Each structure stands twice: as C-alpha cells, then as structure tokens.
Length: 298
Image (cartoon, one colour):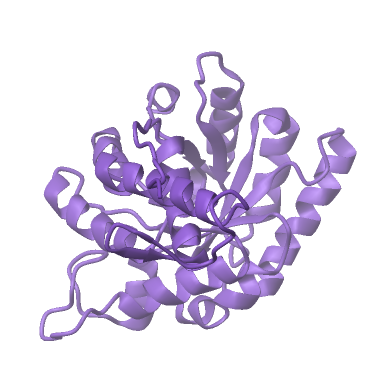
C-alpha cells in the first residue's frame, strides 16, 4: 500500500501512524513511513504524515522519528483529535524545535488539523488561528459521530429518525472558522469505498457550501472527488467573463464604474470576489477559458 501511494493522482497523500496502526505496531510503522518517504517515484503530491493525537503517548515520538528520518520529504503533518488551541501550539513548538535541530526550513512544515469532537467543534475558531502553520481544518466525521452519540450507520449519513440535515452545523462551523483564519476547509472521508455515487452525493454537499476538498480512502475515489470539486467548464468561463467585464468597467477606459451589468446580471465587488474563487479553482484543476469580453460600442 505504501508503494502504491506514490502513484496515486491526488493533490496530497498522507501516510498514517494513527488509526490505521495497532498500538503494538507504532514503532515499526514509523520506520516504514520513513522508508516510504525516502523512496524514489513520488510525483507532485503534497506529502504528509498523520501522527497520533496528544491524548496518546506517541505524538512526540512520531514527530521525532519521522522528521529525523525524512524531514526534508515531509511537507505537512496531520494532527488528529484536536480539542483546543493548545494542542496546535504544542505541535507547533515541537516542529519548531525539530526544524531548528535538524536544519530544516523554519516553519516549512504545515499543520492540517482534524476536528473530531464536540470540544474541537466548539473551539474551531481558536484552533484555526492557533498557529501560522495551520493550513487546513479537516472534519473527522466518524469520531465526531461517536463523540456526539449520533445514531447513524456511517460517516456523513443522516441518522435514522431525524428529518433535518444533521451535518450542516459541523460543516458550517468548520467552514466559517477556516475562512476567518484564511485556511482551507476539508471534508472527511466517505468509508464506503465502492459506493462512488454516495461519495459524489456527500462530497457534493460540502463542495456546494464552499469546501476546498475531501479526503479519499481509496484510489477509486480520487476521480470522483476531482469531478465534484472542480468547477464545470461553463461556470469557469462565466467566472472568467465576470472578471474581464468587471475589470474593464472599473477602469478609466470603461468609465470607472463600481456596479455594472453583464447581460441581465449586475456585477459589483462581491461578484468579482465570488468569480475569483471559481476561476482560481478551475485554473488549479487545469481548466482553460475561451471566454472573451467585448464592451459594447456606443
């Protein structure tokens, strides 16, 4: 499995030392992760390692072993079960110490923080702002469901007997906290790996809210995630047209106007901000636009 990770066409691959590893196998798993990170054949994926959370005795040793063995190959650390801002600061301090001792770039390793409990959800805002290293808040649906006592058969699925949208509050709480701190918001994994329609449905929910991506637990899920979080060509070209039109109308040549019409659509600074997000996501996914704005002649 570690060898296959190098060939997965995902934006990021993380090697797991937490839930996927039995307590008796933690030390051996660290050596395997170091070996995998040091091997040739990695592509352009961001390389990350998920360590154990601070409620265990393994967190610091995970960081020491991985950074001493492959620190120049690690770009992100996934920190699970974060309940409070202090959990992030402890990781920041440990990484700072190790970077200094090992001659690594100061602050070069970012933190991706999993929100997986009621306490973590309540403290999401302070957690997101706890360190400049924080690059993303990640919803941990399975542990959150267990912590809340929710009656559902699987992460993301609605609990039987509840007619509302049970996950709207945690999804929005994490999203707002992430945006307020200018970090990414990432949805958690869908564990029914063969149910790609289920993944498409649940990932589509978080994509519609504005999430930046979702975790995948199987290579077959990556294509669906890319599809869901990539703007359609139509939406991408419309965003491009909005940006072109607004730039021209707000210029001196276009009359320096702040609120203008594009067909039947009124454009203002908020329109530009929305279009920028869609356009940036499309460009990151490799989309290209043929849209061309032509101002009307008098």
